[in-house]
Length: 315
Image (cartoon, rainbow, N blue to C red; front, side, top):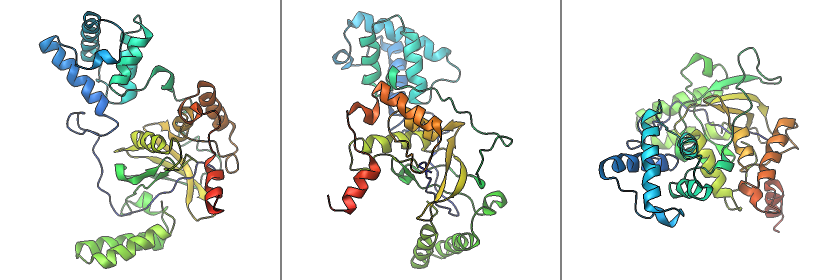
């Protein structure tokens, strides 16, 4: 299955809170939202638009002030106020829908928010307890994902609480024992033993889609998109089994959103047909190809599996 999830079962993690307002818990994914909220607040006090905006838009400062007045009212009326780049982008697009396309896109670019053609609407509902896909062996609920846990566009290290009976029952006994012993070793400040036990856990394969490698074109963008989707959030993992490297293979859901769908639709991943034959994955990849978003902006992007093979063969 091409959407392999590599996850790490640990005793605990240090979550990044997403319960705080943007100005209190900034991340690379929320910086644009926070900046826009700040500028709208400042506009209501000073009636001044931010310096530098004119380099990104074509209309006059008088027109810009008109936008900010509309956006400030729309922002205050939105309940809850936008917290994600997608929510902020949709509010801007809806509020300024009668204005020039160049101005709307320039404003979004100024704040680093998604452009209209990159916004995707999820079409795959999260499975309910009565509609778990065929082949799923077990399900896990993770602790919040730390930003540093996203290594690249297809690798997320997530943690589950081995003290919780539901999650513990899905984790191999030797991994549960190693996690417990590691916690005790850290409490006793026996860090050498704790590190050795940590290796035992990771070697067991407890560490998803085939995205560009970090050193490939769009590799960095794929990593940042995956980080934006999962950072600070708890994930629902539907595990199908293990791959040839003994890594668990599964589907990722975050707040009801199917992560593989989001990555494919935004052009940051390939449908790895050698491992996963689901037609909807091909459909979502083809949608991104047609829009020429993400890696599909290139006419002939390298396939990650061929790139890795070439590296192994010294090409």
